[in-house]
Image (tube, rainbow, N blue to C red; front, side, top):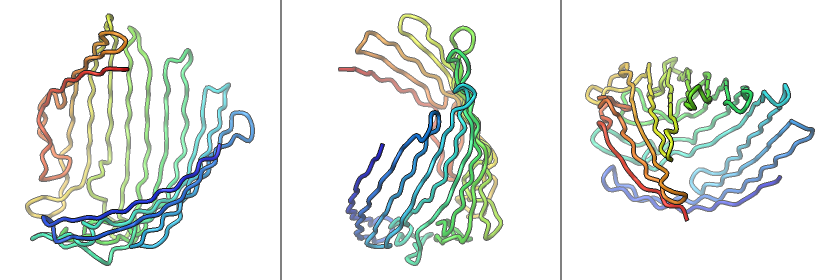
Length: 292
């Protein structure tokens, strides 16, 4: 299976509230990808993309993946390798305020990453257990300067870690989904941790059908061990860990109509994903979905 395409973009950015930005940028990109299976139970993918910015020039990136089903298709072994490119935003380049000045000399970010893992499919379609090791190396990563008043290209940075996930059905038709990520994110040039990337994070969701088209569930998400910047002093700090709880439910009234409701941040946790920007307190949401 071969897929190809062309993307063309024309952007015009104006911002008078954070500097005096009035800039244009054009992009023309072409891409192609091939998926094939040379033998039974082996699946391969290869793709290339070329981006041509009229402001930053041309960059070619690519990705290859492989998957192999073994143990009578009960286990999938998989791996991938890819490269990436990101141009700086106009705010990175030209933004201005009393506390920040953009850096017009920024160069685009480049990255090379790989991952390898396995999925175990439980018998009788009871769920899946997964584990993945990943690593990405960055050159010219765009990050804040030491005084946090501008941005610069970090010569070398790296993120790596492990992701674990599970999806299964327990006794009583209770469905569970859980994920956990351990992440090491390092500025290798300065030998310090990258900001706002939690070392540990995860989610757990549990839900069950109650009959009559009614289902209900609850979930919890957490993030721990993050470095951040104090919004008042601009010093690096250890950000507070946080845990957020949610509950939700749905009623399938008929084949076309479903009513849904959820409560986010059920325990009204006071937390900040970014220091100086408090998250919302608890909130209730309801909606209806109609299928034609």
